[in-house]
Image (tube, rainbow, N blue to C red; front, side):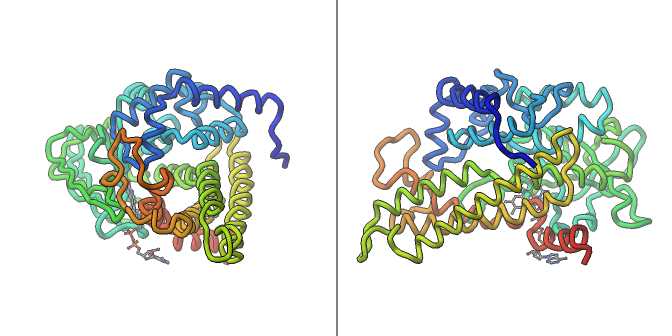
Amino acid sequence: MDFSFTHADEEFRMQVRHFFETEYPQDLIAKIARGHSPTKADYQRSERALDSKGWVAVNWPKEAGGTGWTSNQKYIFDEELERAGALNVVPMGLLYVGPVIYTFGTEAQKAQWLPGILNSTTFWAQGYSEPGSGSDLASLQSRAEPDGDDYIVNGTKIWTSLAQHADWIFCLLRTDSSGKKQEGITFLCIDMKTPGITVRPIITIDGKHSLNAVDFVDVRVPKANRIGEEGKGWTYANYLLGHERTSYAHVAGKRKQLRNIRKTAAKTTTDGGSLLQDPAFARKLSELEARLDALELTVLRVLASVADGGAPGEESSILKVIATELAQDITELGVEAFGPYAQPAFPDSVVPEGSDNFAIPAAAAPSVAQYLGARAQSIYGGSNEIQKNIIAKRILAL
Ligand SMILES: Cc1cc2nc3c(=O)[nH]c(=O)nc-3n(C[C@H](O)[C@H](O)[C@H](O)COP(=O)(O)OP(=O)(O)OC[C@H]3O[C@@H](n4cnc5c(N)ncnc54)[C@H](O)[C@@H]3O)c2cc1C
């Protein structure tokens, strides 16, 4: 397999780089670099800037409103976005439910939901996990009972990212308990303004409000909002999770973090010279750089395998494990490199937004929050233990 970039790819890279340096909102880049949490309006401004070039739905086929780019172009675009320090798109609409809608939805559903995802007027949340059902997702208990042309939904979803901003939520709900637990699950899209829905915030260890619990009490949802067949939601859910797990690599973002660590370590003096000359530190840094090179090749391999619009296979589980473990190890070394500068754990409180007056190196400000936030990466999208079970069963046939 040839992973080299062509002359045309490199020209494309320059075009994308120019966009991020000149047309993309530079104040957003500065805000994210300081570790501040993006607001809903920030996400919208970022996505609209991308959409103005037709670049927001990178992975969608052209006929659905996407770019129709080659796998190399997609990879280059992601690299340049992260190199610039721009905001990643909110994944729930563009990366998760969008592909489910254009693959399994009716024409009416595509017309209803895809334009709002593309122009960032509609935000989505993912309602899979429940208080008693995370890894064993198929044991979920929230119910959708048929009632004429509607379903009546009752139950609680939890760990629902960005539900506080969501206009719609896609949920897995039980419509039948009589057979195998995977068989009675239905995929429903629910308008968050429907009476009976309450969003409760959950603040995480990194000081951020991203997670929520969402309660549904007698929520009336039209059957027209069901994706595909009743009881077949598990199939659509798994299709979506393959896409989700492939989206965790963030190679260029990791490269930037490692560059910052190298730069900081070169300037940090210890008893024996710079931190970079400390053999134990230098070895850890080199190992992480080598693991990142390996991750990059794995990403290119997975991208090549889905180049024709196919769904990622079990290799997305490998990608998820190596990318998230690497994120955790890089952020840990970041805290080590920044030393005492890393202490302020919550950049929102120590570096006022809009201030250029840093008492600490800018890259150090978010480092503890990034370290703490990265702990969650081996949990969400299906925990790494579960991914290892998938690799053992479906790839190694153990
Ligand atoms: C930051 C964050 C964002 C999230 N966002 C969303 C979201 O937007 N929407 C959504 O629906 N969910 C979301 N989740 C939920 C996430 O998908 C679940 O947390 C995850 O699937 C694990 O489920 P659980 O928390 O119930 O843990 P459990 O399933 O209770 O697992 C607890 C521990 O046991 C291990 N374990 C469980 N079963 C096995 C097994 N069979 N073999 C080996 N080990 C096992 C797990 O690996 C884990 O270490 C998010 C979670 C986090 C942390």
